[in-house]
Length: 359
Image 1: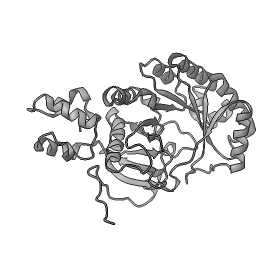
Image 2: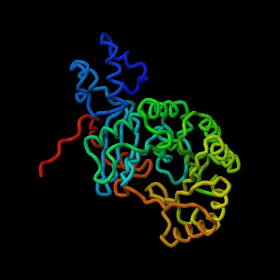
Image 3: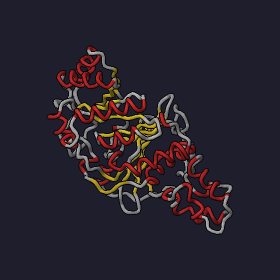
Image 4: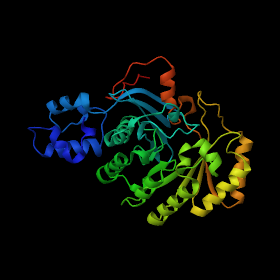
């Protein structure tokens, strides 16, 4: 599988072929990805046929679209049977891809569908990058109606904790930035608070963005929602985020999933505003996308508005994000949850796109 091979070692897949064939393959994989090896028109037909069944390190189990074609979600399946989710979201000026870094997750956040399955394994760097390549190839065949026809932004906010899979996430970043040519500032790595990983990332050469999945502004509540807080409490997490800002000069963002009756109170808003002020951070709020295995529910519109007003009253920079793709279970882990609780669907392997019906 070429995406599981280091991009500098692709010649090992092309025995008896001239050296320049590796450069051609590298461009197809990383610069202009295609859905099927048959589209690699400058490679010999026998090479394309040999690569074809092994191009992608996963098959496509489910592909869905919502929001008038502006949200696209995939549930991939690895040969080992692991599920991987990726979500593509189109906006007028950007096309953002949310990718997974692990199969499952060990962080056990109470409100997260992925955490309800537990941890299976780390994804390899090639499996992480291949999600970006597949989305890019999909866009070439099926552009979104009112969004750029390429992946402009990548966020590590899918299944898994990126900084718990540090070396492989780092290599996937290298491939995106140094090989594919994506701007580092268009990539965001989100973490629930793996403090050593934050500090390691701060010392890397790339200006990637850091997002802290905070969800609670005091240790008591945060330890209940995010068990990792027992190991890395808020003071340690805030200090690591401050170090990241000091090293990169990049504003840290705080992610906050609003849960009714839990973290949507004025008291939590006041404490959150204080943390954001200490870090000079921007706050992104999003209402919970509920899952059937959790009793948690999103707050009312009035609660959200009161929370936002409380933050703004204290000078916080805050954005209320829209909840995309609710009808296709687009939140982290939800499509996998549906696949696990409904009758299995036959796998559709990643290949050429399905033919469009004639009007």
